[in-house]
Length: 411
Image (tube, rainbow, N blue to C red; front, side, top):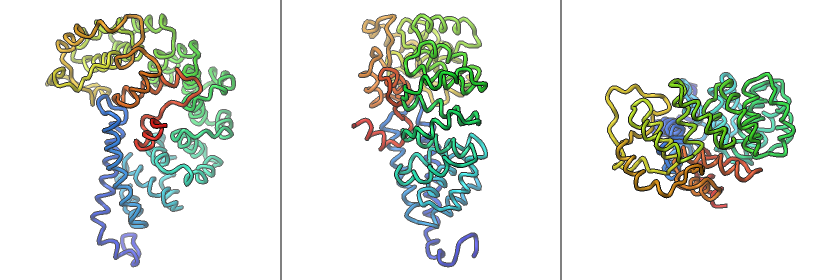
């Protein structure tokens, strides 16, 4: 055997360049679609186009059988999220024991690798995956149990016995996964069960307890979620849920407090966009003149008003000397003057004190419409609003396979 291939496989190697291209393209497209999945200017239709291309390359590798699998495993020599996603998808799709064990060992070694591994599992048909997830859920290794739970949640499958066990697990990471799953799956019947987790010694567990209860209508938990999220180093999700589910007066006061400190001004901008009160628009327009905050302010403005930042008439060139903030990497540069002119024309249809999302008062109809045609960033917000408004329903999975999202939207 040479280079890991048996003589019986040599004939298939004449297609190795094509298969290697499938593997490279699939890994590249996965990385691209993950960046796009919560991006500020990718829309669902564009995500679906990326996914269609990605599925085509994965299918090319699946058709190649063991040879495609080996090429995917060889690509793990240059390990990244894309190569791990492809190798895992092939391994579990073919149910190759050695390949599954190898990719699982990588995913279990570092939380950063668990995400693409879980995503690869969630892209497989649930019926074929279920026996494997059952075995992982019974594993003595906590990371395996956490992966099994995360994969089921990603597919919005409710497995209550596993969730009950995970809520009492000695492993804090698994408890945090379970507490988050309560909110993601809309399991409001678990709220009394998780109440004691508000005092969990682990900061992530305390935060996800508050997050889940907030989505289920607990305003006190929504307000606690902000401080808990800071402790757990997840300020983004903390601001999202606290601004959307907390009391209006408390939310406005927090925005003012954050805005008064230059060190937390960016958080104030994100909070204003999530809260959605048009009263903050004049302040956001002022910040569009400040290069360091301009893109964040424009995104918050779009979250509230629905202004289309992709419109060429609203854009401007990037400043040559501005150091880029990581959260602004894919955001448009918008002209502050053009946005002011837009607001002068459109402001009459917005009422201060009424929360808005994507240009419409917050409500189920507005949320569903954004799930269909909003940017991915707006769709994430709409998913949280829809779950909050329809207590007991799961958060719509805006980063799932696009064809499976289509099915959910059509239902």
